[in-house]
Amino acid sequence: MLEVCQIRKSFGKRTVADGISFRVAAGEITAVLGASGSGKSTLLNMIAGLTAADGGEVRLGGVRLDGLPPERRDVAMMFQDFALLPHLNVCDNAALPLRLRGVGKAQARRRALAVLAEVGLADLAARRVADLSGGEQQRTALARALAAEPKLLLLDEPFSALDAALRGRLQKQTSDLVRQRGIPAVLVSHDAEEACRMARQLVLLGGGRVLQQGTPDAVYRRPVSAAAARLLGCANVSDTRYVPPEAVCWDESGCECTVLSAHRAAEGWRLLLAHPHWGELSVWYQGIAPPARCCVRVDEARVVRF
Ligand SMILES: Nc1ncnc2c1ncn2[C@@H]1O[C@H](COP(=O)(O)OP(=O)(O)OP(=O)(O)O)[C@@H](O)[C@H]1O
Image (tube, rainbow, N blue to C red; front, top):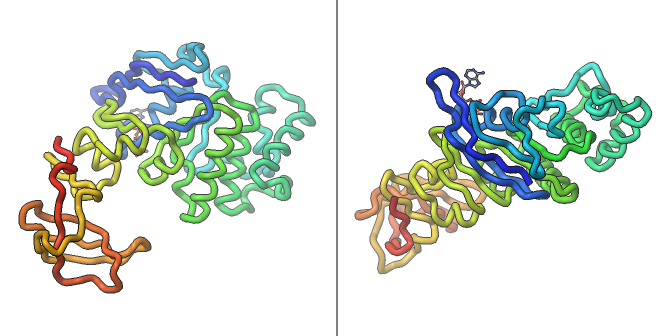
């Protein structure tokens, strides 16, 4: 179990963490969502020991980490830019953390090859990382992160440079490995969909504080504020209310709305409606071509008020 308790950090007058607390159980991923500059990477760096916190505690398996240097925390990190050493081959990159800990060359190589097999890269062990695709590089980074058998995995937007199909595969592979190894993991992301796909718990950050935390289902069902709803990527949010998709239904006896715009996506047509009472409403439409007008009903009891 990872426990982050009341962690605080300011850079000059800018406070990026103002008493942030959350827990991550073994074998589970918690996703931290926040706007750009909200302090997500700083939070990971404080957990890893790369940035000193101004206050608060970090515990892993009940042991206090603050005060320990990064190399004694048993924490592995994965970054968006992979951070591999281009002049080394795949196996040597994966073995690097073990070598840095003084593990002998042959043993480090054996353990690196075992983890490379787990991530499906055994055949590429001898290849220079500069000659790998983006997805192969990221799997090498995953193997390197896991080779030293860390007690905690920190993921700093590790998949954002990859295309959608590859991203989906690596998200699943990483989630499976975290579960199988029974270690806690923290994922930092801008992408609410990725966070929900991978994480058991979401932590929404804003203004250096936790705006909300809970399971993706609970947080989506009832965002506590407009800021939280916007971080989740919810449509139909104003400062005072959120009209969730389940509150809107197509109904001939409902209010007639003009379709202001329509754009095509994989899931269907996204329509922007002018509703006489609720104003602009964004809704999905599954017909072949978008209509010019339509009738919808909004179930007021399901509208979330802030
Ligand atoms: N070493 C530092 N010295 C001064 N300011 C810093 C330092 N590190 C980060 N900051 C500032 O702290 C704020 C939070 O930065 P951080 O990188 O943690 O945000 P983030 O949420 O990860 O952003 P992004 O999503 O854009 O990567 C930013 O305003 C950043 O400029």
